[in-house]
Image (tube, rainbow, N blue to C red):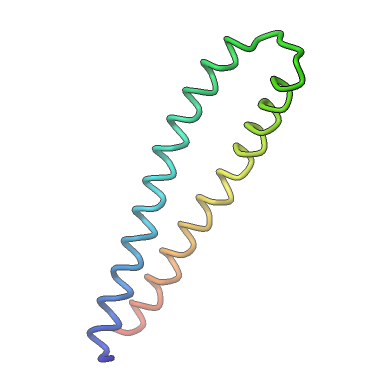
Length: 86
């Protein structure tokens, strides 16, 4: 593989990480909207399944920031390496 091919592959990897971040952000936005609507419907519900859903949504929300950081870090590190290749 030539240096040019490596650069092209790294450039594609950076774009894939950025695209992944955009898709994640869109999914989070849609999930937050659906969660707000569900919370209104389930407000005051004490059923075991309602409680389980609230916990699952909280767990999923807790993973958003770390996942964003992973996408951003991947794009940054790959970009740094690409810059060093010249």
